[in-house]
Amino acid sequence: MTAWPESIALVGAGKMGGAMLRGWLAGGLRPEGVAILDPAPAPEMIELARSRGLALPPPPGFKPEVVVLAVKPQTLDAAAPSIAELAHADALVVSIIAGKRIADLQARAPKARAFVRAMPNTPAAIGRGVTGAAANDALTDRQRDIARTLLSAVGLFDWLPDENLIDAVTALSGSGPAYVFALVEAMAAAGAALGLPADLAMRFARGTVEGAGELLAREPGVSAAQLRQNVTSPGGTTAAALAVLQGADGLEALMGRAIAAAHKRAGELAG
Image: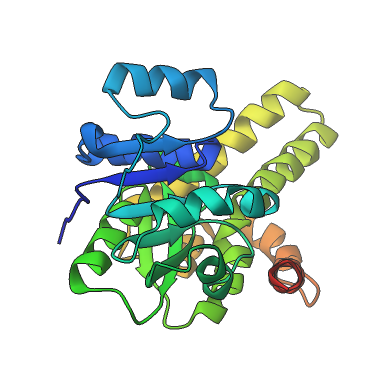
């Protein structure tokens, strides 16, 4: 069910907050109900507010149906008084602040009851993000529908059964785009080492990952394992490469250690 809020306050309009706002406006959010609170908005955000009629900053006495928190973790305390003023008793508070638990948010917005903690990733900027979220027990059916509408407007979204799983989402998909970019860098370097011009090796590596990702997107009913097998002829070049990648200390083991390290660090940041 699509349920846009009647009014929304976006606290923090940086890259991720701004990307989500653009996705919401494109998806059908009424601009006249949007207010932005940011101490130093970027010129493009000022222009977006001007061109679409968004309030920047929120008008006095603004009581939004939803308050979205997209500030950096280290600036949360500085923003807390403004958040507490916006987050009235009937407001839904949605946070994409890394490392800050629902209990941390409740301490900064003591009047509010309904909280959602979400972890998107940077492809949300092009509508291809991945977001996992957990909610406390105070959400109404409408608030839950609103949260789903907002978070699915910028890509794949699903609810998590437990807030403790947010750190796993952070390690897998939140940090995941960097793993893919690192793979492209490594593939390009390997191609250059075999004699390809560096710029051509990078173009081919990028194009390969882009195309493979598009195959995954266009074949949702086909598993990644099957797509891999479709490329792999017995005794061929791909099989030779996969024998290295799937060895005892190959890609699966390496990725497991990498994601475990990210998961451990997410827990440390959460305190």
